[in-house]
Amino acid sequence: VNPEWRAIAAVVAAIPAGRVASYGQVAALAGLPGRARLVGRVLSHAPEPGPEATLPWQRVVNARGEISLTGAAALEQRSRLEAEGIVFTPAGRIDLRRFGLVGDGRST
DNA sequence: GGGATGACGCTTC
DNA sequence: GGAAGCGCCATCC
Image 1 (cartoon, rainbow, N blue to C red):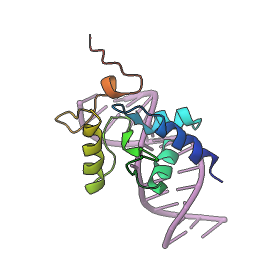
Image 2: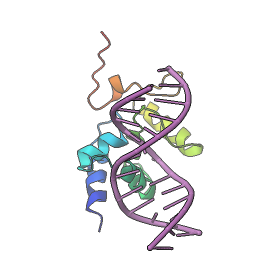
Image 3: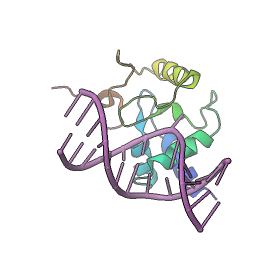
């Protein structure tokens, strides 16, 4: 009863390591434009990202490239992202220009 | 059925 | 850049 869940899971699982995607982005790719919240909802209901990363929601952050979560979960997600090569700015955010799915590190 | 909430996003001032 | 308003919608009380 969760075709959307499947779509979202597929998109999230399709996020290449060292890159992050925003909820809205994932939602759009999943075919759920405007339903970013739905993505978050699904992820919140999603299983934990084990070593196999069934659903690497860790690569999913908000539109600001910031971890929406709070507490240990956020710290853990951040840690994982760093482990994938993601670099967090002193502000605790991520440069979607570099780690975004479309971001290719263009600053000129 | 109604009110409130939420891993959110975008536009406008 | 910061703040405010509006949309989206599924779930919970």
